[in-house]
Length: 102
Image (tube, rainbow, N blue to C red; front, side, top):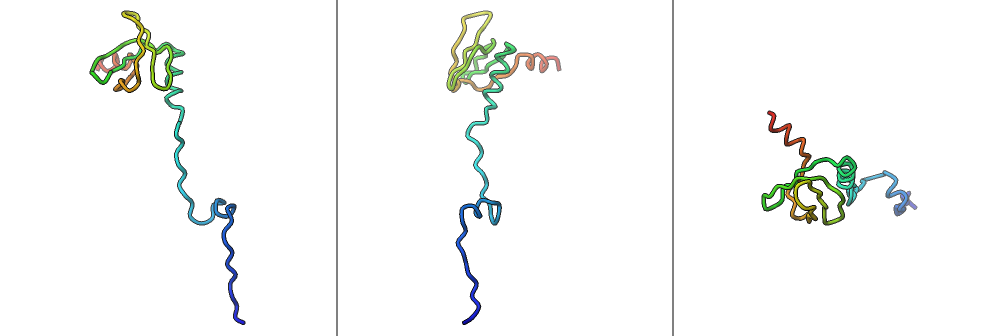
């Protein structure tokens, strides 16, 4: 008889323990960054500027939000429910003032 090397199949424990090639992990689907941002702006009642996809600009503060809508309170004019898919971008109104000072 010759010397033969015994080959054992890898167990799941060995496969994921860090030995050999390791698969890249899939990033989480939700990072909660959006939720954190909205909650912070809502708590401070930060004046916001919202640029819509049709180039209309709205100003006010965010009262609440959900998965697809933001409620914007305004001093001048009625409060609005804005679908998120109609928002091009949004930023704090103070950033607009800083930009204009330059």
